[in-house]
Image (cartoon, rainbow, N blue to C red; front, side, top):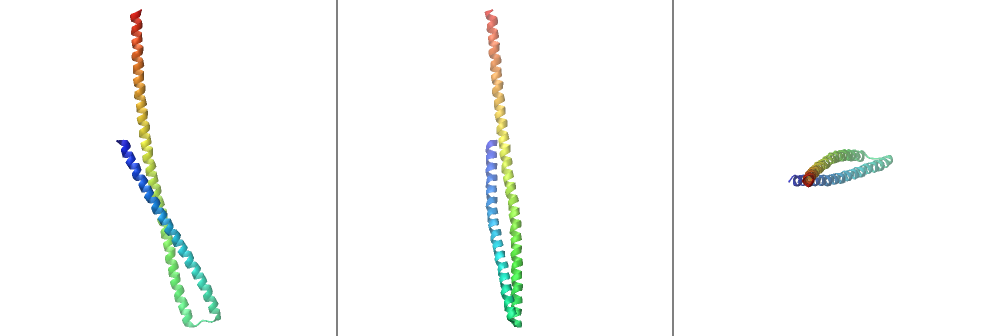
Length: 152
C-alpha cells in the first residue's frame, strides 16, 4: 500500500514538473519574442533618427519638426513598454524555473523515501530469513546432538 502511495506521489510530482517545464518553455518563447520586438523597435528608432537627421540637414519646417518630436515620443513610450515586457518575462522565467526546481526536488524526495522504504523492507525480509535459517540450523544441530546421545 505504501508503495502505491509513493508511486502516486511520484507520478503527481512528475506531472507537476512536466507542467512547469511546459510553462517555462512557453515563458522563454515569449521572452525571446519580446526581446526580438525590442531589438526591432530599437533598430527602427535608430534608423528613423538617422533618416530624420539627414532630412533636418536639408531643412525642416516647424510642422515637420513637431511631427518628428511627437513620433519620437511615441516611439520612446513603445520602447519603454517593450523593455518592461522583457523584464516581466525575465522575472516570470526565473519564477517558473524555481517552481520547476521545487517540483523536481519534491519528486526526487519521494523517490528517495520510496527507495529507502524498499531497502528497509528488503533488509527486514533478509533478517527474518536469516533468523529462520538460524533457528532451523539450531534445531538440526540439537536433533543431531540428541541422536548422538541416543546412539552412544
